[in-house]
Image 1: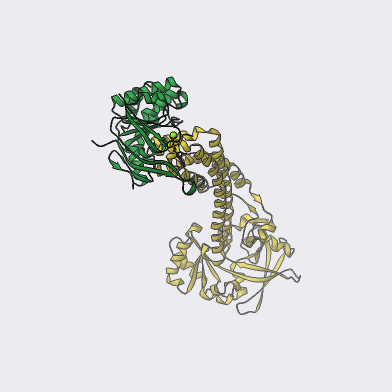
Image 2: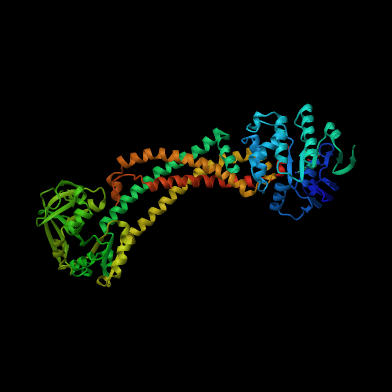
Length: 229
Length: 408
Ligand SMILES: Nc1ncnc2c1ncn2[C@@H]1O[C@H](COP(=O)(O)OP(=O)(O)O)[C@@H](O)[C@H]1O
Ligand SMILES: [Mg+2]
């Protein structure tokens, strides 16, 4: 089986000369399809940097990144964009919905940008919203939704195009703990029901406790990689 | 398409800013409407005057054309009436008139005058149908058809203190250089508001033929079609006709004196339009740039989701064009009001201005509000948006999706 994502001796540096920052050093990691992986580690340990590489938003300074079996090094930015559009879903800490589009339109946007034909885009988006528990809210604008609801829309937006991989950078950081827990429960359920592969970064202990696999980063190195029951 | 819907929603997103952007376009298109209507009016009158005075096309001998500024009578067209008849046989030719223009000294009665002027000798039909001299008569009448009549331009009449009923003597030369006086009674004084009419000494053709001693010749043959735009077609027809094979034929806008003016009108038009478009584009650029900055994150997110660079550009350009279309419609409508007022009432530049211009501009100028003006102003309004949005849209397209991942 092709790994959802595979990193081999990846290094990522920012800046140059005296101001050079080694954000990642020699990171190797394999994430299998249907896995639910949490990236843990203190702030500045390189979680976002790693997610950017997995999400094809950036390219490594050295080493190679495979997404859905494709080597991303040497890809043009156009090819990377096509790969992202088709194979990767994103969930952000601050939701980042388009404020002038309704919940349904935000979800539809992912289908429009995915570069694939989807039949009835509208029905598909509504069904996806229903499965994240937002039945009947498709016509609301983001500012008419609570933070938890907005993050649900964002999750629907990430999943609607059936990506190989969903990347979530601190998805609960902007939510209160109760709402965060609900959102995480949703993510876990979708992971099991739809077989979606998730990689989540967090420094929230609650999130780590829900994960099967926790990869811990410190100063750009993987310091532990635990499977949990 | 969803992207277009998003662009439309973005229009309504920050109403204040959209109004600011649209206001810039409103201002620009209103100004363009007035400016273009004004230029169309001024240049239209100018070129109409030139084409009606100089013929839609004009025939001269080659030797005359070579030394035209000296107006050498000896290089006239022989048997000009036959040439006119030949020209009339060509399709599209509506009228043909032999004409003589020559320098004279003008005196009233027995006074010794030192007033120089250009005497024009042409068939009465030319005065009535082409120069429309009748409507310019401010005192007295047009030619009645009796022998020995003249109509004087106002400036000339004032210079020699001539009044209707006075007898004047125009002292010119024959083609061989001998002095030749022509005596005529002033039947009318004309004021056309331009120097061609106001400086004119108008006589029928025959007295000037006698003065120049050219039998049935004329220095020029003026050809008219239905409209001055036919000038080049008429000229081509004439050149192809064996009757004119030895002569020079020029359309009105090919004549050295007018071609420059016609070219200049185009240049003035483009310069004024470009300045207005450029200044307003700066305004659009400013507000659109604010929008791009404000939406950096959401653009980054959409770029992460696969929005292409061209897609990003389209998003902003459509928004800009939509605002410009509305602003342009309002601006043109607003601009039509002063433009129409200028078309009806015009502006009096004064005779001094008109007479010192070097070209036959009217002293009283009117704007001309045409469909072309409205379309051009509106189109240029859209160009304003295109120019003003180009850079902000390009900036938006270069936003990197990583920016969206960086949460703060
Ligand atoms: N664009 C950048 N330019 C320079 N340094 C950066 C940039 N992005 C991240 N870094 C640095 O790389 C390191 C890892 O950052 P990051 O991946 O954001 O960590 P985390 O997400 O775990 O907080 C930090 O030291 C950070 O300052
Ligand atoms: Mg981070």
